[in-house]
Image 1 (cartoon, rainbow, N blue to C red):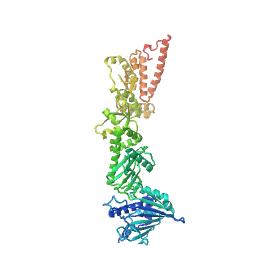
Image 2: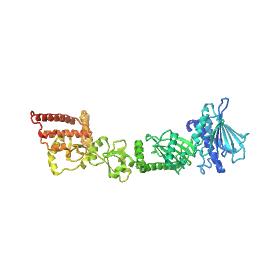
Image 3: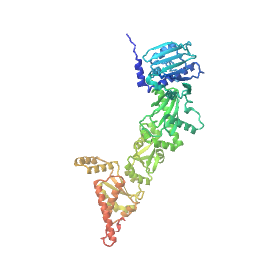
Image 4: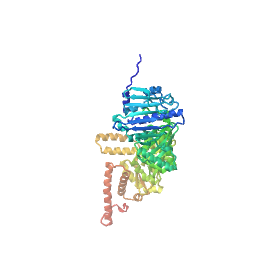
Amino acid sequence: MDHRFQVSLRGVIDLLSHHLYSSPGVYLRELLQNATDAIRARQHLEPEHQGTVRLELVEKQDGGPPTLVFSDDGVGLTEEEIHRFLATIGESSKREALEDRRKDFIGQFGIGLLSCFMVCDELLLVTRSARGDGRTLEWRGRHDGTYAVRVSEHPLERPGTQVFLVARADMVEWFAPERLRQLGRHYGGLLPFPIQLTVGAEQERLDLDGAPWRRDYESASERRKAMLEYGREVFETDFIDCIPLRSQAGDVDGVAFVLPASPHFNSKQKHRVYLKHMLLSESAENLLPEWAFFVKCVVNANALRPTASRESFYEDGALAQAREALGHGLRKYLVDLAHEDPRALQRLIGLHGLSIKALALDDDDFYRLVIGWLPFETSLGVTTLAEYRRAYPVVRFTATLDGFRQVARVAGAQGLCIINAAYTHDAALLEKLPHVVEGAQVEPFSAADLPQSFEELTMDERDAVFPLLRTAEQVLAPFHCGVVVKKFFPAEVPTLYSADEEGSFRRDAERARDESDDLYASVLEGVMAAAGGEPAQLCFNLHNPVVRRLSAVTDRNMMKLSVEMLYVQALLLGQHPLNAQEMTLLNQGLLGLISAQLGTEGSSGGEGDGGVGSGGLH
């Protein structure tokens, strides 16, 4: 034997109020939606019918709870429809025609009227159908699940529906005149039908003059000004720009506003969306692509499907197509900025740069869209990646700040453009380039690559610097550092210390070994033994006057001391921490230079022993 489910209306109402709807105020939204659908249904019967929605607040003189009379001149209900649609939860008067005329009706779940039980204990609905026998019927429903239907003793003069709601004691605030005014404008401000509110002898219109983005303006600047003002009113934010939105899929149109501050790239913006000009939600999250975090929007959709709560859109193919089309509009905005107002684009990227970079790493399409416009610091100044690639076939970068500092000055003087990719996400963005952009070439760059671009010496110059080269090789052999002499700019730089990644790692390991106990030091010894890479190198710059004078010094001790100090100076200029051996070298070198200088001064006074002779560095 089959049995029917028994549904507790009180339990359903509790479910609606605590889990489905965001606040009791949605009761007015549901009434507006039902009235709008009823007017549109009547327009199918009478195409010339205009339709009007009326709200009348009746406040009792004795201080009792107020009554709201909500009226529309829509299609109305027959007695059979009353029993079918008002007494059956989940049944909708729009369901039969939904697939054929989805654009016409907002509601489709048959539970909207139940939201009224969140603010009152009893509903009285008086209706006359435009398709019926001319009778006016009354439906009285109670929150306990009972209802009664009878012929009204006060017939309506024309088809339509009236709903009488008596405020429950704890819900009187939702019937206050200002609250009704605010809710009516909030939910129905864009509806194409007049909405009239009557309180006592005062009457006012709650609907606006249609969607602001559809109005005609004298100029583009006037439109932009009006849109930004509208965005300020809606979101209470001063936006920096506005973007028109349009999608044939879902029949969506509206406007997006560019945020004045950068949100976290993982945050989802909440948008105001209308369904057939009725406010659906102020916190819809699934309308725009995830990468469109830098805008908030207001849109109206005529052919998207709402969820049961009617506070967001149902995920289906139509929504996916609309989302793609709206994203295309935002991309076009960025492309147009790049061509028409590059400075505005740079300001936008500067404002939302970190979030834009983070999203570009996760979204290949967005990466292709923005990567060329992103600015990067280089050894020749700040430039966009697109400008860089137009000038240089290979993108070269350093992944650390120290690495950039080591090469920036010298590389720039040689005309080499090296990107400082030490900023957040920059290195990962550049490494991703050849995987996303066909034909792109990217190479990491270090100080070890610089000497390849330096000018070689002539044969005569090689002969002249041979004593310096031989002495330097002997001095730096204990430090596993090779020596070369070349010519490069700027001339003020006497030496350049360079090491590849493995060499830098080995150097750090040596310093850690010297500062560790025996057990850990032995572990590091094994690590260093396994480390590969080329040995470090100290490059002397023959363009530098000190190096030229040093190559002519005949005093071997002075040359040795000078090489040691130039080695230490190159390490410090390259941001390389000194190990214990190098610290000793620095201390001894300073003392040696002081001693040499004192000796020279003594010699010039006629009391010394000649010191270092005429080959000194002063």
